[in-house]
Length: 99
Image 1 (tube, rainbow, N blue to C red):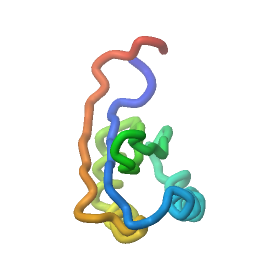
Image 2 (cartoon, rainbow, N blue to C red; image 1 turned 90 degrees about the vertical axis):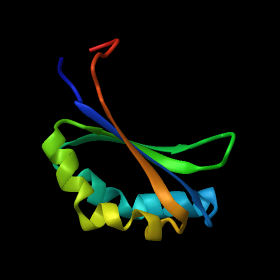
Image 3 (cartoon, one colour; image 1 turned 180 degrees about the vertical axis):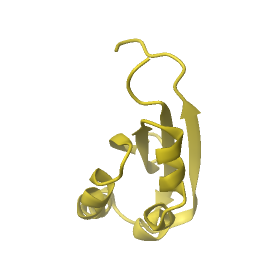
Image 4 (spheres, rainbow, N blue to C red; image 1 turned 90 degrees about the horizontal axis):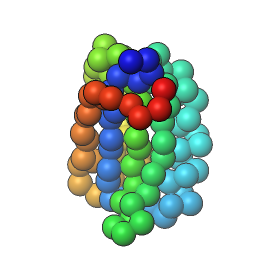
C-alpha cells in the first residue's frame, strides 16, 4: 500500500468563532506545511456539535511521533483557545479504497 500510513485526529470546543479559528489556521499553516512526513491536513468542523479540529495524514510512525513531541503540537489548545483538552486519536491505515 502506498500513501499515508497513519491518521491523527484532533477535536475540541473553542471559545473562538469559526472565522477567528480559520484566521489562526491560516497564520499557522506554514508551520504545518513544513512538517516532514505530514502529507495532508484537513481543517474540520462538526456540523452537529460545533467542535473543530484537524485530520492529519502521516507517511510514517516516526514522523507522527516527532510531531506529537513538538512544541507545535503542544500549542494547539492555547492557539485555538480550546475549552478543556483537545481529544486526540490515532488510526493506522490498514486498507484504502482507491490508490
